[in-house]
Each structure stands twice: as structure tokens, then as C-alpha cells.
Image 1 (spheres, rainbow, N blue to C red):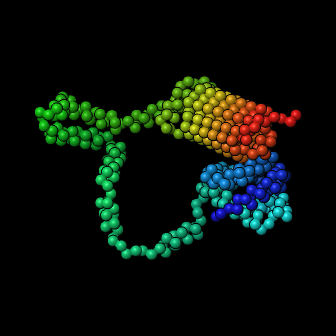
Image 2: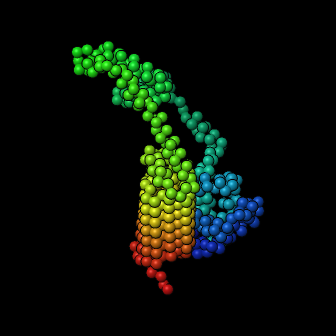
Image 3: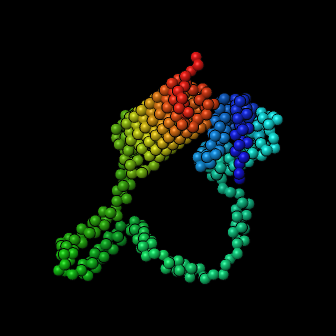
Length: 426
């Protein structure tokens, strides 16, 4: 589907002039037409919800020319809505309420062309969000695809077995050798330890019999206990994954034992070791923990609970902190360059002088956060909540953020996206 990007951008600019009223009207229209949806918002701060709606629309329109960046965000948004109790049948009334609200505010500018542009956009957005929520394509689509495939004419060529043989013979020898070696390696790790020990002993014995006794290799192989040494070496290699599993188990036990303990150097070492081994730390619960100077570069900490934790001067470069809870966390001087912080909760977090260059903060909640002196160069703040965030002296050069998102933030002395220095008019 080709979207009419220019029409979407131009019409949305007109709506942004009445952004707050637009968001409030949307929920009024939604609940008026679908009163059964109102109970879903009984415990929701509607002012905050209206702000989230606006942030989402800004995010979509600002990134509509960059679908590679927008697609994963919409999928993540769809996955999050599952947790809010949003099911597929609710998407249609939301779309209809949005169209009604656009018509209400655009008035004479609500032309058939504009309506079609937004209808197409909402259709594409819904499809991506449903994909993120785990929905598969409809049976009708699958049937249509299958019928298309079946409709292709079958060419009368050589039998399948002959095609397969030809394919194998046509492969270079090194590719065939690679396939065989990969299968042997897989068999080595899958086979039971006792079988590997027997095979190693038999193969070694065969080599000893074949090799000339007077050769250097023959003398070496004929040495005492050589069979035992070879078998022991093979078993040592074979049992490496088990030892690694045991090490990971002990490391996680250390982390679990330190739960609710503020200071634990053993926990810091265990987390660093697990990360160095490529073990995912997704969903880690270390709220209130002191993790000063910890090195978790490239760690997977998505959905981690690090609320009120002390991560001062921590190295979290290239880390995945999507949907993590970092509310009131201490991140002063932390290295978060190129980190993923999409939809993260950073309310009241202390990010004073933190390095957030090239970080992805799409739809992150940074309300009341301290970002004084932070480096946000080339970061993406599309859809982020910056209400009452302190950005005094921060570097926002080339940062992807709208004036609307910065409107309620404190910006004295900040370097703005265009390179200019912000000066208050007071």
C-alpha cells in the first residue's frame, strides 16, 4: 500500500494547532460511539493518556518517511496493548473515532483525498500493531496466497530425486565438506558422553594400529596412558557446555540471593559475567540495587526492573533497555550511547551528564527526569514524554524531537537540534 505522505503531513500540521483539544475530543467520540470501551480506562489518568495519543501520532507522522524505524515501534506498541486488554476487535472503533475527530478539526480541509490518506495510514498501522500482538494473516489471505501458488504451472522436468542429486554433485567440494563437518559436530554434542568416550577410544586405537611404530607420531601415540589422555581430553571438551551451564546457574543464584539487598559486589560480577557469555538479562529484577560502574555493554535488559537502582557511571552502551523500568534510577554520567530505550519508564530518573548519543528513546517517558548537561546528539526522542524534564545545557544537536515534545521541558542553555543555543525569553 502506498501512503500519501505529503497529505498526511500537511493535514496533521493543521491538527497540531489544536493538539490538546483534538486528543480530548477523540476520547469523547470513542466513548460516545462505543460506551463498552470506557471501563478499560477507569483507572487511567486521561490527561496522561491524551498526551500518549498525541505522542504516538507525532511519532508516526514524523517517521512515516522512515518505515524501517517505524515498523518495529508499531509492532512493539501492538504487543504492549495486549497487556492493556486491547483485543483486535477494538482497533476498528479506534480507527473510526480518529477519522471522525480528524473530520471535526479539519472541517473544510477534510477532503476525500485526505480521508483516503488517513484511512490507508490507519489500515497499515493496524496491520503492523496486530502483527506485533501476535496475530497471523487472515484465512482468506492465506487461501488466496495458496491458490496463487497452486495456480502456477508445473513444468515437466527431471524427477525430484534427480534434481536433488544434480544439486549435490554441482556443489563445490568445500561446501559438501562443510555440511558433513557441521553434521559431525552436531552429532558430537547430541550423543551421550559414554558413546563419545567409546568412539574416541576406538578411533585412537585404529590410528595407533595404522601408524608406523618407528615414526615420531607412532612413538608419541605409543606412549603410556596416551589412550586415557585422549579420551580425557575428548570428554573435557564434551562436558564444556555442562560446566558452562553450571557456571550460569551459580551466577544466577548469586543474583537471586542478592534480591532486595542494596549493595552486593558479587551480584555486579555475576551480571557482568553472564552478559560477557551472551546470556540474556531480559526481565532482570534489581530494583533499588547499587550497580555503580557496572559494565553491561550490549546487554539485553529489555523489560528489566531497575527502578530506583544506582547505575552511576555504568556502561550501558548498545544495551537493549526497551520497556525497562528505570523510574527514579541514578544514571548520572552513565554511558548509554546507541542504547535502545524505546517505551522505557525514566520518570524522575537522574541522567545528569549522561551520554545518550545515538540512543533510541522513542515513546520513552522522561517526565520530570534530570537530563541537565546530557549528550543527546543524534538521539531519537520521537513520541517521548518530556513534560517538566530538565534539559538545561543538554546537547540536542541533530536530535529527532519536535517542538511540541519540548514545549513543557526546561531548556535553558541547551544546544538545539539545529545547532543554535536556547535562550529563554524571560
